[in-house]
Each structure stands twice: as structure tokens, then as C-alpha cells.
Length: 421
Image (cartoon, rainbow, N blue to C red; front, side, top):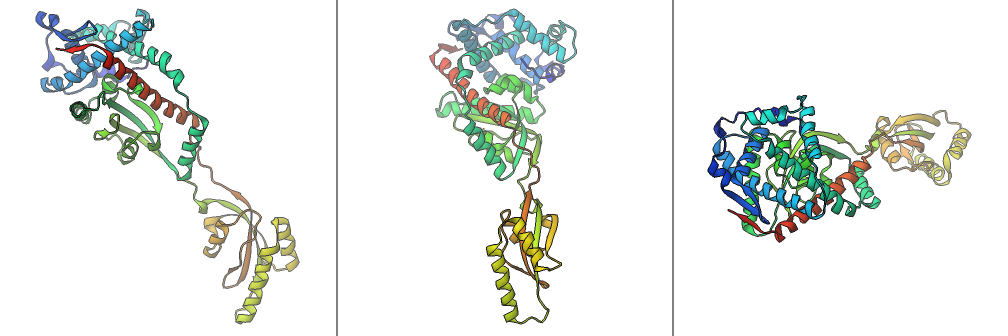
């Protein structure tokens, strides 16, 4: 299980405004009951402290209160996820949880066991972190067993997106996401989710850690990776999220992006551009037959030579025939012009060259010196990086898996008995 390296560094944030251990009363009071399992106010308080300290969010009591309802929702979801794993006989071992904790320590070059000591010094029980890791491991196993086999991305889907990206060039964004789902479509729930998104955005813009808040609150599969989506194009995101991605500056936190299923919060950490092929940057192997005209040639002479040029264009086939005719006509300017970039040819030539198929003679091109018949014998396209098909397949698959996972959790929530006190 991947955890953000910034977790331990962020844990050093001051908790002066949250100091003090839960009282005996808060230990005994109930925050919520999920299918007969209790979430105590002590559990909730501990998780609030963990989120605030690890994310670098504003530690003021007001912010903690604003986050509390979201954190309680996360705790409820975690209980449902663990209960579902238990129902499916999916085991989460203490060794797996300990391994996840140890991984965090290793990423931060901490001696084994020091994470628990650090949390304890901040008034946070390591159990709160272990419970969260246990739920993440459980849900990852549930999704992997029940949903991942159902996600199939067809070759035609990949090719359609590849061609779409190649046809007009593409911009890729190194993107992170937080997704808050509308568990129900009623207006009150949508308002609550929107308010939650706005609270998170304020914290993110104030310097809170995006990966940590994504891990805590995002309902996308990418939450386990701190919201990391990697390099994607806007076309790979649903609804309004794709166009919004294109407008963000580097490291900017988006406004709430409302879609049919929920709200996205996006951040672009870097951007790279792959231009579509510019036809004028193509290199061609070019030949010409040149028919000279005298400076004082009358209209009759000009038309006669134009007719000859049209006849050449209509009868010659392929570069060998073109070479033979060029030699036969004996014009010193006729023959092989070599490899040239289209943009480096005279303006009068470009339109003819751009429309020519290889081995087909052009229509006559008139210049001050005479009449030219052109032929492209080879065309070398500039190299443009191919879209990464595997990355596109993963992106489509992850989006589909996230949707299925959200629906699965929504169904668990709908069928559960949840009593929020």
C-alpha cells in the first residue's frame, strides 16, 4: 500500500489548538452506530487529530469542526468496508497492517516503532492510523476480488482515444484528484457534499497536503495513491472535469467541479504538450520538370507551355517515369531537388506539395522564370511521441473501477443501519 512520503513530515504540524487527550466522557459517548458497531467520539476525535496533523491543515477548532462531519462519514465508510470484507471471508492480517505502518516509516527513514512514538507525542493513538490502514487494505481486497475482474477495456476503446489524441495533438497533465460522490441525488446531500468540497479547497489552497486529504476523503480508487492519476489528457476524465483540467495553472487547486455523480477537486502538478504534425515540417524528396518561359512571352506561348505542363501532369506515373521524361526534355533545371522541408520551399510550391500523394505529378505551378511540374517521391513525417496505450488503458480502467467501487459502497451504505448521534 503506497502512502505519501509527506505524511510524517506533516505530522510535525503544531497541535497547540487541539491539545489534550479525550476525556472519559468523550470515550464513552457514541458518534455513530454502523450495523451494531460503535464509532465513539474518542475514535472521531483521534481521527480528526490525525487528519489535521498529517495534512498540515489549519489546526484551529473551527476547521476541525468543519472537517469533523466529513471525517465521521469516512469512518462510517471504513466500518462498512471492513464489514463487507468480513462477510466475504477476506482476511486482513495484523502483519499486513504492521507492514503498511513499517512502509511509512521506511519511506521517511524512521527506525521501526518510531511512528507510534511520534503520534503519541502529538496526543494521537497509533490505533487510529492502524484502523484506517486496515480499512484501506480490506477495501482494496474487496474491490480487487469483486470488481476488478469486471473491468475490461477493449482495444477499440483504446484506439479511439489514441486517434482522438493524435489527430489534433495533445496536452497531458500530471494530475491529482479528490472525488466526493453524491451518495444520494437529493438537494440537501448535494449541498452538504458541495460544502465539504469547499472546505477542503480552502485547506488545500492554504497549504494542506493534497495527497493526505485525498487519502482521507476521496472516494475514487486513486485515494490509496494520494489521488495520483499520473499523466492524463482531459479526454480521459468524465463530464466537466476534462475541460476544467485544461484551464488550470500548474499547482493551482480547482474550484469544485460538479459532475453527474459527484464533485472533483483537481490539481495539475505539471504539463507537457505534444503538437500535432505540422504539414509544413514534413520533409519530402522532391523532383521537378521545369519548362522555361521567355520574359517577353506572349499569351499564346504561355498557354502552349501550360498545356504541355498539364499533359505531363496527366500522363506521367511514378518517379522513374518522371526522371525519364525530365532527362528527355533536357532542361538543366529539371531533375532531383533532393530532400527538403516543405516550409523551406518557395511559397508557390507549398500548396501543390501539401496536397500531393507520393508518385503523382502536380498541376503546373507558374513562377517568374517558367512553369514547374513537381513530384513528391518520399515523405518523412517528423517523429511525434505515440500516446501511451498502456497508460490510456489503465486510465480508462481506473475510472471504470472507481465508478463501480463508489456504487458498491453506496449500495452498502443504503442497505446498512447507520445511526449518527
